[in-house]
Length: 601
Image (tube, rainbow, N blue to C red; front, side, top):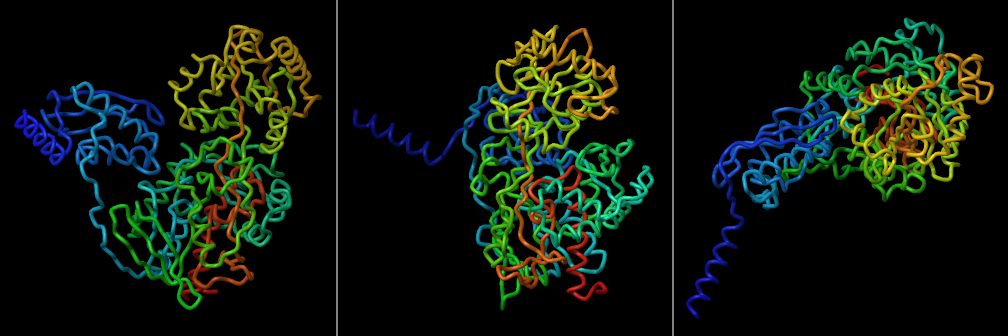
């Protein structure tokens, strides 16, 4: 008996020392899981005791984000012999899809999908690399990369730090609306006059007098030439359309980038790489290095354990916002549905504060009234679907079935009405023709037919509410709306369409061309507040140099993009974030070049 116990103990000790064991039925197995834009299919090959190959055989993910995960994760899974590794930061949905599909294959091969990863200790823990640059840019969105290109083309040595595995942040995934005020393209599209003072007036109105006037004035004066430069330099493709009407503006200014921001962003990124500028991904800036009151560099840590000490003549913070950091939010932002990038954690704000910078408008964020709760606490935007619905016969109602506002009003005005409702929602009502346009619109935002079919199958039983029925009353019942009142509301709206004038709420006649069909089916979709963009900013001067608590410039420190969003006030207007990204990046780089003596003052 004693010998048996000793033998068993020895076997257990051997197993513990050896670590996990892997056992599979050899062969190649296939599986798929839902990614951001459709199914992600994989093929996994096993020997009797190892995962020998993982291949993503089909995917339709976002270029440069999901596609990067599809290229990188298979190798990492084989190295770790497990899916219990970190996903690619910035490509969470695609990473989860790849892991789920590979785990399905592991089960098919009679393996254990919960096997822990082999040791993944940092390869270069304790290693320090020092480098000298003229300019270090923290963040790789539109503002950071625009600044990098302009600085490098004027002779500056530039490096870019990006904490995520993929580049771009919000710039790589935004919807693609760009307000091109005062540009050659706006004139070509039929608006010959859109002066800077008009932009100042519009943004002060939408920002409710909370705008930082220094940056707003600079924005209005420089946006036309910055946009002309960006359009000429990077050759982004726009949808072939007329300038879009927006209630926030006196003049039509908005155009949409073809395919959203992603394709345009990749052109900017390519320009950076073509210039030989190094983008250090998986490399998080931890602190700004100060010497004699001046910012002289950055300390950064790479995911593999390497520590970098970059000395520089200037540092540009282009780190984005803080919407993904609940600790930096207050209500109503804290409880709003978030749909922005995971990278928006306020790193730049905190680093700037640590060296004495002053912040403003930290309590504000841009909220939209057109989100659906795709997962608990997580939104997906349906704004492009709504825009197409207004071109047909879509209307907004509350849960009593009443229409309350001009559907083409500003996002802020619609949000104000929405928040007064008992259930905190409005509902978009559509006939079949309008639904078809809505469906095409949300496709551009990454919502797939599979998503829509899944939500429609629930028919209002749980969030997100995508109710439908062969009659208005049937659809209303599924959505929890008063059907009788809704029928009267639709009849009244159709009368107004026939009249050619919205006497009730002032919807522009150009968006009242079609009556709501008298024949079903009908669709009703929830409208909930969503947010991604934060307005809180470091305070800067007209050169985008960061100011300290006494209002004096911090030598060597500049900021651009969302970290300086007080330019908008407490609410950003349509298409202005892309415009501000390019403008602030261009102006910040020019200010740095002048300080370095590489551009005439």
